[in-house]
Amino acid sequence: MKKSLAVVLTLFVSVTLISCDPLDKKYDKENYSEVMAEHADSASRSAFNRATVENEINDRRNEDFTYQELIEQGKMIQRKEQPVRGNAR
Image 1 (cartoon, rainbow, N blue to C red):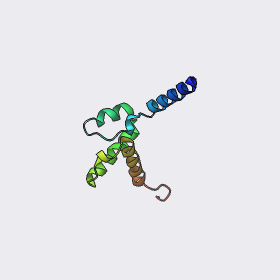
Image 2: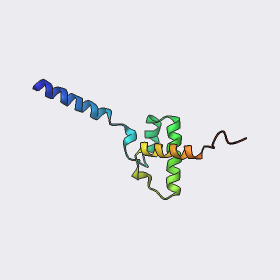
Image 3: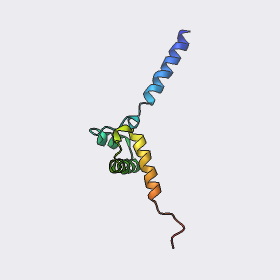
Image 4: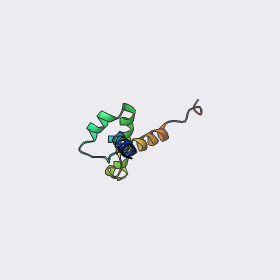
């Protein structure tokens, strides 16, 4: 019984530590540059910047989103802005 409990607790602690991704935390205006510099690649930083600017233009609070949500928003905006290939001559 003690072994089973030890295994379950170890598994729980491991999953908890693995799931502590800094990009899953809410946007913080004071610390965003350090978080992005340490935990995001250049494409994600570009998407993040695009989303934060778009949110400011549209009066949305960036603080309501996690870093990862802002990155995903930015990627969606970038995809919409790409010209459609194949139709241009």
